Image (cartoon, rainbow, N blue to C red; front, side, top):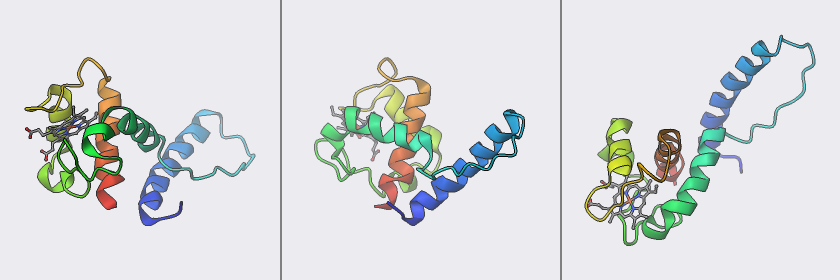
Amino acid sequence: MRSPRILAAGLTLVAGVTLIAACSGGGSSSSPVAPTGDPVLVEGQQIYSQNCSSCHGASGQGGYGKKLAGVVTEKYPNIDDQIAVITNGKGAMPSFSKKLSAEQITAVTRYTREVLGNN
Ligand code: HEC
């Protein structure tokens, strides 16, 4: 699963790991950390497949719900506007404010922008 989008996620991960290493007293062991990608995006993918794919399609291609892949970043240049649609709902799009935490909504929103968006 190596692709440019994973690279970007990997960079984020490296920053996080550096932080964790700093917090754990900076042990000298250099255990390799597999760049499995940004955990937030992994979480976002799970949330998407459980809550969104039935309407928006497994890869965001659209269905009952609108196409998301490749269009949301242009339509919502500011991620907060997209988060608002998912949090509050819009037309036939259900509100997720009771079903998902703010953190989960951010994770799934990032997934639609950073992973689906590059397919
Ligand atoms: C019951 C079906 C359904 C589910 C489940 C659903 N959506 Fe939607 N979604 C829609 C519909 C229908 C629209 C179009 C609403 C409108 O513009 O009137 C929409 C619109 C959107 C939009 C705005 C798209 C645009 O072009 O403006 C986003 C973003 C979105 N959904 C994300 C999600 C996410 C993320 C989830 C899962 C957490 C989700 N949706 C779950 C049906 C659904």
